[in-house]
Length: 131
Image 1 (cartoon, one colour):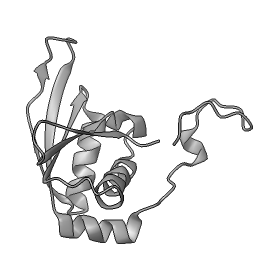
Image 2: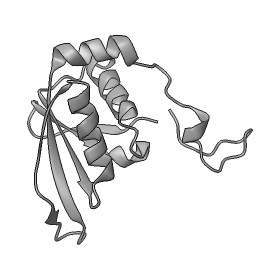
Image 3: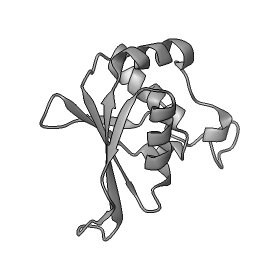
Image 4: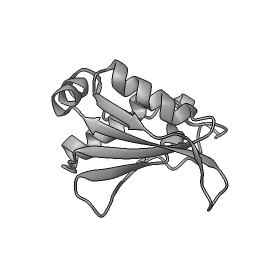
């Protein structure tokens, strides 16, 4: 399974959608970014990602990016989304391409699926949508 990495109206910015799918495992999100960026050649200067309170997925990814020196991350204060009533925070990741390439060399995994990702499925009939 990969998170969706969507284009926006600006070629410099792409959106990391559903970062919560990896449930606070930011290495998986960065792995998906590397696959999109280097394998699929979908490059950009910035990535946008959002999270709802208590912000565990967004905060976890932000900390991972900073600790691994993969760029800088700007974040907004939380604000109530009038469409969902959720308290939402936005993050903008300014990518350090040199460090991300090094991270890819040291950490990238072509197949990141493991059994802990598959919850509640019979061993012989996995119902998860991993591609």
